[in-house]
Amino acid sequence: MVNTQHKKGIIMLSEFKAFIAKGNVIDLAVGVIIGAAFGAIVKSLTDEIIMPIVGALVGSIDFSNIYIVLSGEVAPGTTLAAAREGGAVVLGIGALASVVINFLILAFIIFMLVRYVNKVTAQFSKPEEAAPAGPTEVELLTEIRDALKK
Image (cartoon, rainbow, N blue to C red; front, side):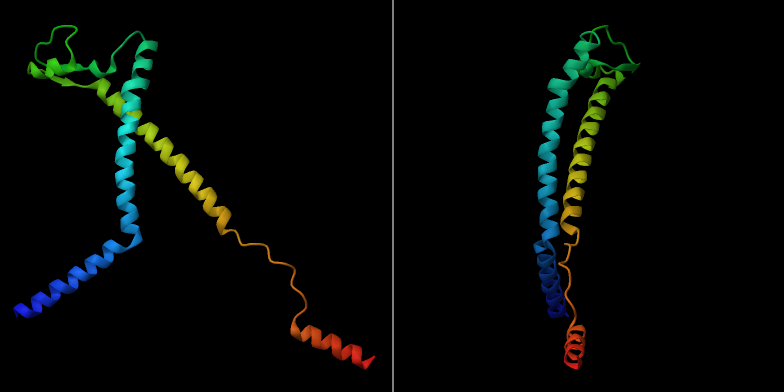
């Protein structure tokens, strides 16, 4: 009984190795790692460049500290972190705006990437125009026969 379970375990392990070695799984892992790194770049772009510019355009507003107090006492001008530390229940509207902008940037970049890949794939999948085909063997033999008859 133990020997059978051991064999099943070895078979399962070898199947798992074959699954992991497939190109799609490796490609997926690379994509996840690159996606996480790219997400960090977009987050930094949004938090450090886009949101300060938007804040300056609408009147020197720091979006990271825009919130709505649901319960608790919060003095005007208190930062979001300080309001939460003080025990207030708050909705971080500015943080949500940053996340939505991050999402829109990533979605647009992914859209452009998929669009480009589809365009390139379509170019490579077009069948090449075949050279004009000459007469078939039967047609050649028929022409030779007709020429010999004349």
